[in-house]
Length: 174
Image (cartoon, rainbow, N blue to C red; front, side, top):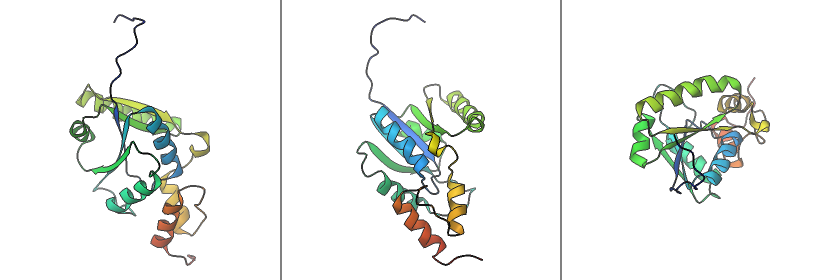
């Protein structure tokens, strides 16, 4: 491979940030906001995983994401239920965005990136590390706190906090 000093040809970049987003957290939003500044278009794709029992429906998760990303004109919210690679081809996207919270995430994400690359060598995975204040945060943790009416206002956007209160009710569990 020859390395030259010529600038690379600028391509219109479409990236996909896939996930369950059940619910979207401030950690997800950190990655979304940062990726939206890197790529021309970012598709946040909600996975409809039939093997999981989500708290929010795909439609509810998409609506929460739309509210939380309303300030980002180059972000599109969508969903898929097929292989990610097939979805990427439908969207003419070649970049997958994945967030890394800790070293433990990397092993799984590297395996997925390698598998996706094996399935379609035109696909690249772009890893973004979480900002330190979100390195511990997951949707599972948020749901566990909310289930027992714990404070989640610093963990999720206000629209999600309200949706969690509605799902779990206002009364304290014993």
